[in-house]
Length: 416
Image (cartoon, rainbow, N blue to C red; front, top):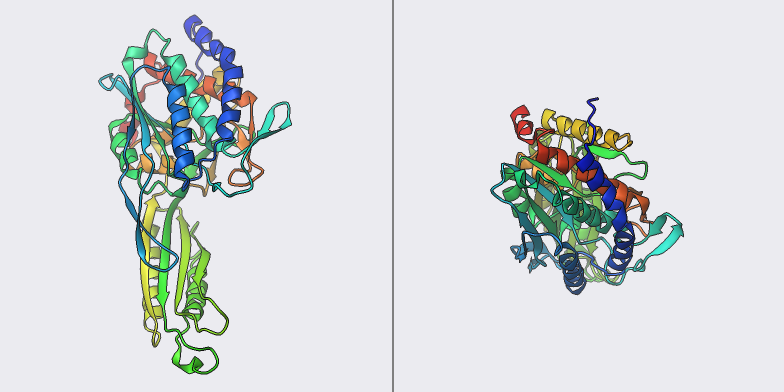
């Protein structure tokens, strides 16, 4: 591992982050109490306004950017157009020689009627609350690191775009185009998903896709005219078995049938069923193979007498491998951590995030720079409060080293 040290200016900047710890803790509590589930537009607007107020301390252009509508499938099988809250975009020094894209999200997985709505302290250093780790705490880390950069004598060499989106927890269907746009322009990316509780970062990530199989049959009285009906739920059950059987057909491939919608009263043959499923894969080429299998399964169901089947969905995030540019960036991150006395390690994961989107745009990135925490997507979600300062310092060192040129950001894409 390479080693770097901090000069006097860098030491002062990094240490100064600790003076803002109380404000960071105050904000993570206040933000956690705002329900910003991906479908709660009122809550998303409240959270975005709170973020705008906090980020206003940074110079640059801060604006809401409207996102495109996206089609979805309702529980009745019909297509619906879905609208989204804006992405918050902060741009600073767009003509600087080094350009970084920083990404985060302000939505959570907890709906407005979910029981998990507020925070509580588990001990003096551990907070349990919605979004504390994933990733309102990460947004605070991003903010403080950028604030630290703005006090550097080298800041003019580094420009950045921060994208804070409202739809990451549902696969970034609307914000994907912005991630691709700014990822393609940047020398590297920094994303603020939570690190693991022990401080480990995510390394290689699988790719992901979300699909729905819409199956229609024919309703009939379950007693008098059962023979005239065509049971969509039975066909859906066959489809689920066929989909599940694809797991491990390729190394690292998993297919997860997650939900069957349809049916009704016991005395009616079900005329509609929707099978919603997710796929994870390790290799980009596996997407072509497994999608062909989905089409074959759809065709087999469609050939059942009186049954029709339609496949919808796509791959939203391709795999992010530990390719040479990403590996080099991790080495830089580890060196920055060592300068702070942190031992930064990483683990491969089946999870996906905006880092997958950035990599697809050709942007090397490190994507777990947020707080240390765990049990995300559950009512046990927690964050380590002392890691707010710790991880803000880590990102600050990276930004300072990229600005000074000690870390060569321009070299990363040459490794592709």
